[in-house]
Length: 80
Image (cartoon, rainbow, N blue to C red; front, side, top):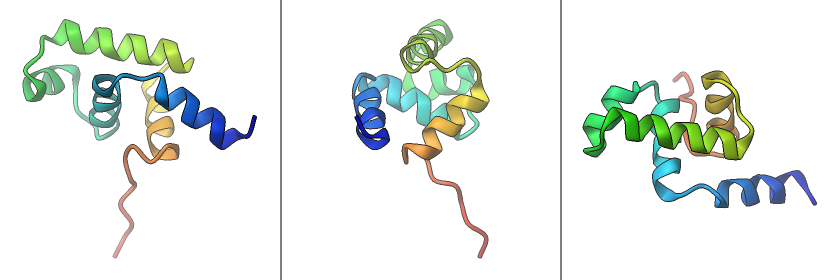
């Protein structure tokens, strides 16, 4: 299986809410801020983050941000 197909398969196992939490976390938002913006409890956001990190075999926020950039969930701004 190609790396791209593997990445698409892993991304497809995330729920839409988990993808939303990935994006917002990678953008630098705290669990409290994400919870406030999405109308969820902090514990629910933390549960989504825990589940998606387990699914992706990711162990810290730096790896989560890397995953989000590599899979085009967020983009890195370029200097003008």
